[in-house]
Length: 111
Image (tube, rainbow, N blue to C red; front, side, top):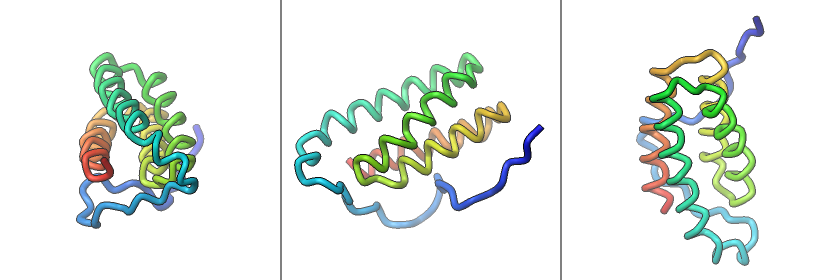
């Protein structure tokens, strides 16, 4: 079994201020409302997958978030995606739950 290496990661309960919108392309700004709506839908999908212990689905959503966050200038979403993926790999339900709570809070702060 591979050993997970701890790197800088998404901290769901950190007291850091909400990150600024770092969208790399101003034209993407018009897409942000739909982007955040889809990220909220991802949170609902993550909750459903967790309830079903569907760690493959959690990993897939996490993988998608990794790329989408950086595309839209929200590195914290990418970090959350990496953390969801890592927690799913070891089937750590309590960690996924904690990450999900932090992810929902993050979306509220960003939106």
